[in-house]
Length: 78
Image (cartoon, rainbow, N blue to C red):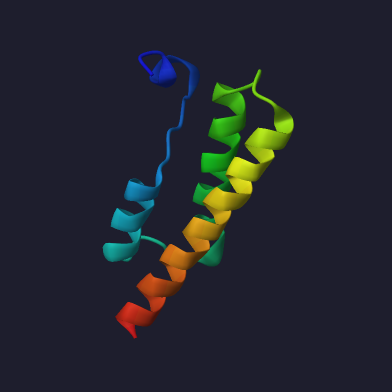
């Protein structure tokens, strides 16, 4: 995806979120939620011509994975 950074102004990915979790960068739920929304918005912006149903399924899967990562991270830190 050589043009990704030309199209997406504020990139975010699961690896960056995991790093933020590990470094305790999220101080509010809103900050965490913002990054989830950013991943979803970036996917929609970068893939505007994709089948909406397929993209919707991808986003549901992505959110499920993120929530599982959050659960593991929070239970690991306890």
